[in-house]
Length: 297
Image (cartoon, rainbow, N blue to C red; front, side):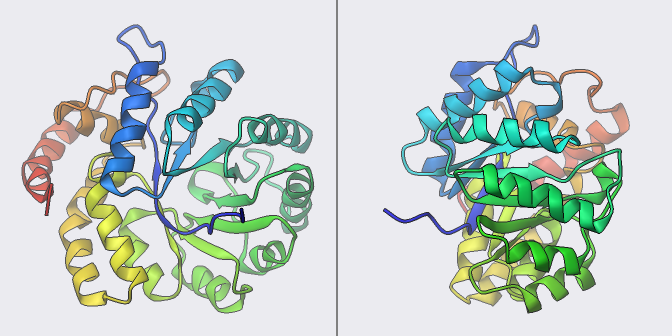
């Protein structure tokens, strides 16, 4: 059995918590099964949206193992990341042992490596990983950007199969799309630009909005894959207000609030994240009234 292609509709899954802040394991399994029923192709466990920064090592691994165990159709990506390459390598090895299909590896944060540092960091991870590695470029959170030339170098490294691009720099993304080898996937890390990125050759999205509207996100991505651009664009334009609302405050604050308002029971956030502010909550509620009308569309 070959490795699955790193493409399609991928959700950056929230981690549901109980009122006391403990992980809600039963609800986590329910969310996985619901996503499969809605057409989600891949589930990312313990990404930024899953509040991985506030999970203990034991919780982190158990969340990933629980998602793997609950999934019957969707493929699973385990989130990882450290600004210490040795720790990152160790974590990736542990995650691979949980039988994930791929690993999402966050670029080193805070210590601001050079471009050569990024290349060496991810090369070490790729050598250690038993599963394909997705490089995660998100300068707004890490304080550093993996430039197009470096991404293209990484695309040639054995076992690096994709990049999740959340830089918002379409010029940079176009250079990567134009220069990468055919089997290397560029994935959108920002819902609002998934449609234009796929029109340029990206192969899917790791989505925040899909936590709330997975069927609609999957429909748009699959239409893009089929070259049905007019239909895909119509869904893209309908979803834009929701995409914007998901970033009224730091992710995953708005998406968890939206899910709870929609009756999806994902519980509170962990500090230092705090509940959505009153003004943002009112704006979100207004958007949701229209957004929920999209369900089943």
